[in-house]
Length: 254
Image (cartoon, rainbow, N blue to C red; front, top):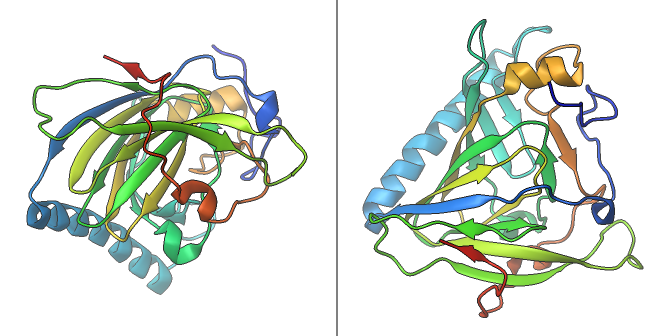
């Protein structure tokens, strides 16, 4: 079994300095299909509706102490756990209703997880998702994708904790409107999601959740406790809104 990654397994806001982190692998992104706007909107609204109804029910009838609360809040959006792990099945799955970066004027932090993640991102009209990492993102090809190649670029990630710190190179890819794009995130690899616009949802599978709980020595299963942030402070929206037009020269295209 791999060594634990967290200092305190039950700390839900553990962080480390971004300049101290080096990715041991890189993320793989697969554009799958683009939909007509009305179909994309119907899909996104149906899935975000599940999250919103889950949060409405949680407000009406809060989960008792000691039980897994399925309606939670992440930095990128409200989430609802569709399926939890059980004996002999180690994965869980959740939906996330993205916040609009412009509406909140806050970017989510770069972070990593103590186990691998599979993330399916879907956008509707007038909405994009900016996916970022400290390492180049490999963009894979599929015959079903008929849209333009994903827009990729490099910028700098300045530290919100220490203005004097050297900015880090950040690699970015943009999920366009009305699109379904998959992302494979290996254990311990940095990533950052920020939606620009009101219509975006994630369908995410965590295939190692029960294993992570044991490996990290957590006192109980929690959706947030497997995250390590690469900043203590959130940054304003302007730090993840600019999208230079140049293609990332280091992108791993396949």
